[in-house]
Image (cartoon, rainbow, N blue to C red; front, side, top):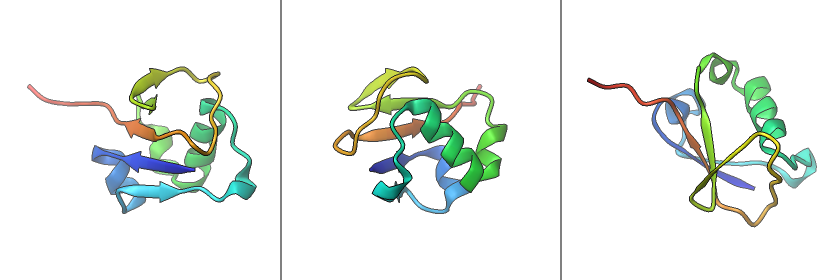
Amino acid sequence: MEILLFGITREIVGQSKLTLPASENITTVKALKNWLGNQYPAIQGLTSLAVAVDNEYVQDDDVLSGHHEIALIPPVSGG
């Protein structure tokens, strides 16, 4: 499973793409967020982290599979 990272999530992880080993058996968006939070604790501090699957925003209980394009969309700041 590959995850595209943008903004602060890219800075936290240190790369623009993250590949999860199949052995992690992550099947939901919530499980993905939990795994990311365990691997990169700074991600837990983001107040609003959205996840997109195949260019559509998804909810925590949505199911993931290895063939989806997953993107982490961090909170946007600006003025």
